[in-house]
Amino acid sequence: MLTMLGIDEKTEAVYRLMLAHCHWDVAEVADHLGLPCHEVRHCVDNLAALGLVRESRQASGQWRPVSPDVGLKLLLHEQELALQQQLAQTQAATMRIVEEYTHLRVSEGRHDVEHLLGIDAIQARLEELAHACTSDCRSFTPGGAQSAASLAASKPLDQDLFQRCVSVQTLYQDSMRNDPASVNYARWLIDGGAAVRTAPVLPVRMVLFDCDVALLPVDPENTKKGAVQLSGPGVIAALVSLFDRVWETATPFGTTSCRERDDNGLTAQEVQLLQLLANGLTDEVAARRLGISLRTVRRMMSDLMLRLAARSRFEAGVRAAQRGWLD
Image (cartoon, rainbow, N blue to C red):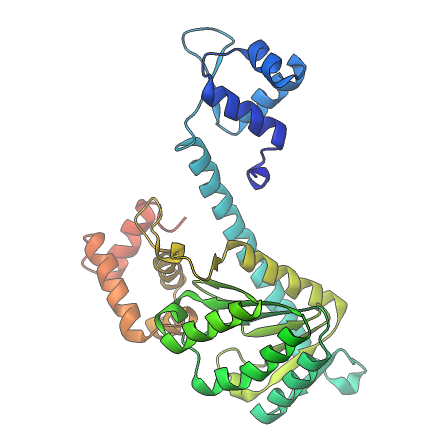
């Protein structure tokens, strides 16, 4: 259960037993678990490296467990930061590849890239790819609240996928949870067998079919300009990896954890807003990235400035950095 934190089953068993019997030594733990002492010592060394046990100040050579409220939460926080950093690196690398591919021409002999112009051409290709899809369909759907036209166009495609038992994974932005129509559609997807999650920010609108073909907008800021269909194995592998990384850290729909606050008292959306503004983005661009209104961004920033006791955006940025909010 704790393998993502670097704790295997044997080490977890040792840690649990030490929590229950904090005065037991290695020999007693080994005897209870039926393990050789050297294996238990190896597990204790791993726990010490992870900060989950500390050497006793009273008895030399004895170890005492660190409370999971402290040790495990710290490990989890470090893991989340590492995943966020990896995600950012993967997003940057992936978008560079996508940008390179979108500038290639079919006339140059690259048959793994095709440009689609106009919403009708894009919708027609979505219908073709969805009908041909046999195993799984994964999608990023940024923009917060979904328009009635978008939901109406998506429903027959999703219904067809459900009827053919195709696995469906859909990622929306957290802000869609505030829109009744989008929420109802997400619930309909789940009732049909789809897995739905949300994240504060999504990198780009994208649909992946069978880990073989992807559709992305030519211009993420204006999807009406057209789309590009990609099928090269290299770029598809990168896009699948990007999707999986965002999916791992996203919040399952139906829970409220996306509104929960971290140790700094920040929601995931507030953390992303601070990062976007710290990177020099305007309020307008930050609002588009988060899928929320400009008014909401300014209200959130005003609240953050109040909590930081800052009189200006610059002062707020300095104080947020000093408090570790921008790590």
